[in-house]
Amino acid sequence: MQLTFSKTNSSGYTITGFQGIDQATCQRLHSLGLQLGSVVRLVRQYPFHGPVIIEADNQQIGIRYAVFKRLTGGY
Image (cartoon, rainbow, N blue to C red; front, side):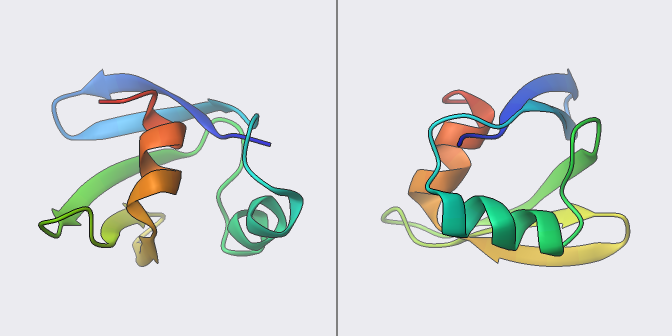
């Protein structure tokens, strides 16, 4: 399954769906509180396709760059 985001403004994305990400990663993201309609903000993106830090509901979550790219549709 993949999380699909729509950009809400310059600082945030809204999760609009799950497609294309493996089931284990999808379940982990759900357990961390990422669900349909959640608004997340990009906090930090490390160079060379390193991890990405996002913030949702006042908690910061580190995810793989490849997952973030799928989630945001390439933003």
